[in-house]
Length: 318
Ligand code: G3I
Image 1 (cartoon, protein in one colour):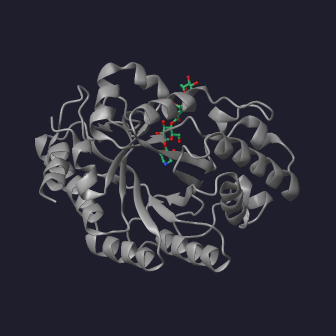
Image 2 (tube, protein in one colour):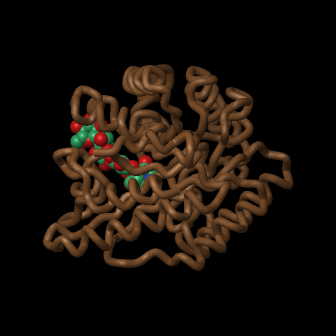
């Protein structure tokens, strides 16, 4: 297998991967990370339920292992995620919060988590999935108790905790010109007008391999964020296919991965393309989408798939 990290210097695009620290025990997993990925994302272990299980207790054991591995292998890190409406601990969801008390809890959480990794985690998904599919604000605990300015507050708290960190808004179905992407565009303009520190937007790019990319609307969307000076990252790429599908589905999957890396190589405001996993062996997809899987670029034996070969070919011919 060509080691995809060899292309980082020439292409200025990093391939990233999301992981859970327990998989670093798997030697094949660890060597695949070392060979192919220049940036690591925390799949679950920096979410509130994992890292902040009790009001006065943090658990950094898993994240520390990932930070250590990244530093030993000259990899960048992406902190995922400081504010979301899923995977929150009971104590956050059950308490009787006021706007001020929840803002204080949010500030203390961000100060503790971002502060611990100051200078080590380069990117943060500060807020994840604040909008619904129609482009309205999701009615989450954050929105209900604090109001829409929980978003600007979270970015300001993160910047205060690590002024060098690059702060992103992250969401899905925001790759093309969707109502949700328009809401993200409006939000970013508001934050920039208020002087709130935001450096980029992440679009998760979880795709269903049955459908081709909408390349035209994606190009338009990437370009409008580029005009704002915003970095644009593919943050959680996987392309799920039906277990029953034959090899042609793997070729269609490869086309989608190829188009994404072509976008990354073409636009100078895209410098990271992160897959939501390393190998089909540990992907979240099968437990979330019954009858679907094989979504990543390495198979369950960490061997290449047409998607891997397509990415390698694009990087090599850049
Ligand atoms: O930690 C518990 C463990 O104690 C328990 O034994 C086990 C069995 O019930 O569950 C474990 O929690 C699981 C958790 O992953 C950690 O592995 C949850 O059940 C499971 O629901 C959770 O799934 C994660 C999912 O987010 C939750 O929505 C996936 O692994 C993770 O890949 C996925 O990632 C999200 C991004 O954060 C945001 N974008 C969407 C993406 C997919 O939903």
